[in-house]
Image (cartoon, rainbow, N blue to C red):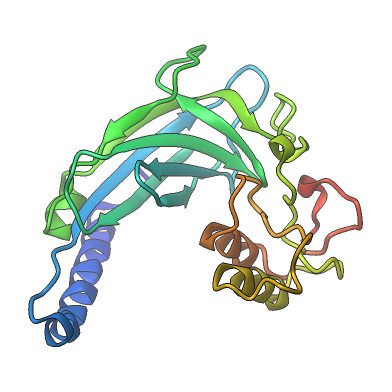
Length: 233
């Protein structure tokens, strides 16, 4: 994996310290500290005959009942430290996707398979234990979900969902204003935003994942009418 053991330990300790620092405030507000469950997943994605992983692509863990966590892969398809936190430890199913720009593919358990790879949430209240007992996944890129043309170009139509560009306001540059517009929709200020392409990830929903994608690509320039992967740095 990319990180040495000492670096993983430092990351886990930091997460634990942050969690402990937040506990007193939660205790004062609720009269009892809420329990947080951690699950950490590492792994590697293998490409298919059409395309291979590249830096900046993301693996996404889509959690049953709501919530998605993403982590970037390196040029070899490895990722490390995809951390899922939940307030319950029920056996929610986690499904895996591969994402490039606004396009999405199933991640499958074996080359040529079409069934989506899944795992079951197995939380631990101690982030250190979660880090040192991280689950490892070896996954393969499978059929397209939305967008993409089968060769990894990410130039599909987003599966019919409007959006797919991080340049929400269409001024040619990805800025904080694009994120602000999406946030206004999320919190309910929608009157002036009807009809705008706010679904940046083209997953059929406007949520904080769209804001995250905009912030990830801040400063990029977008040619009017260009496909998502034609965005320039």
